[in-house]
Length: 232
Image: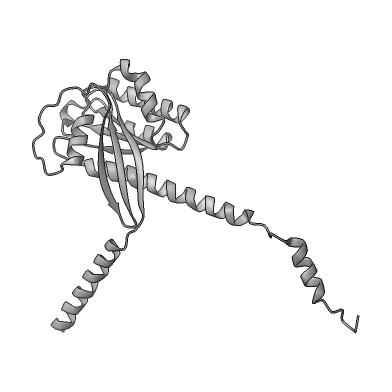
């Protein structure tokens, strides 16, 4: 019985390794981190790039868009995620437009202690959906959830807004690393599923639009082999 158990474990291990090594689909998505200065966008980015860090150094405000690349593995694909960290000040708004119009998704970050930052990400939702697409994938990240005692934006209110506007939502803590990877992976999974659906629709359209290259010839061929019934 024990030897049978070891054989079963060995079989499962080989199967899992075979699945991971058989992934041959690679996709790339461009996403942005948007939100006011000081909400923790850069800290979240530092966490996703180095999840082993326990303490985060105090970061200065981002003065211009900065890009990093993160590879995320899904069960059926490798995702190359190009993440653009953006500055918060209003004076960069025109510069940001040139970036987000080339993106497929965004993580909108607010500070749960700062109600104004929450109102700002709501504005971003309307802007992105209006200027890019109603299907633009958006994740709301209520950062600094470790500062619960100083909360000014309730989780219920954020969930209600996210649900009403078809956004993903998670509260995060760059300090404790809570929900940081989940937020990025949820966004990636939504983007991947959206892409798969579009590919499926496009494939079905191609199939439905296929026409006979020689319909007259085919009809003539059918007539050649048509024999009237002698009983008729």
